[in-house]
Length: 176
Image (cartoon, rainbow, N blue to C red; front, top):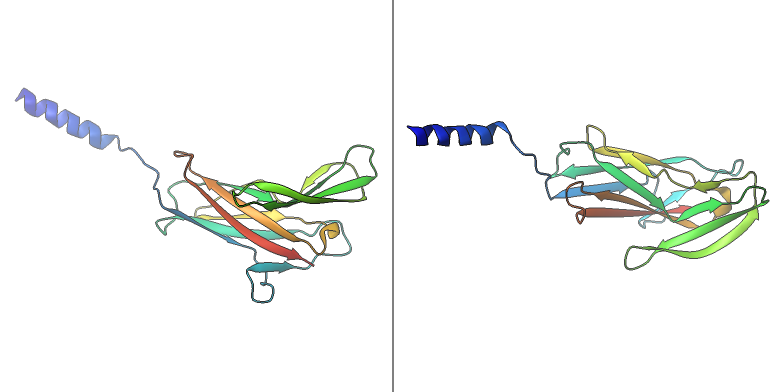
């Protein structure tokens, strides 16, 4: 009888405290929400000529086994382009980066133009979270000085449980 009670308590105790384990099979999509350039995988964004930055929304989704994740997930964004200048400077320095074969950013070149004000400005928001449908979005804002460039946007999801489980998606946007 004692053995039966102890076994019953162990079974009930294990069932009443289920442990949620993060699935290992996430998939992520990333969409530039623009037409593609000449049938390639490069999106095409027309920059506004009457202002410093052109604002545009990009979006994507993160699914687990093709369904919505159990909890909201954090998505990080990086851009190949940003611009900066120091207080009191009259020049802006634009940095252009590209991704090397190891997935790391490498500065390709820089350009200097006359500055309208003083600050460091990224061309994408750094973070977003998935909503109840597993969808996320971020804003990009390339400058008119980047006209003729192709911007690379990288979205990154990293598992909260297993830091080695990471998904990276890239899109390229031609700025004309």
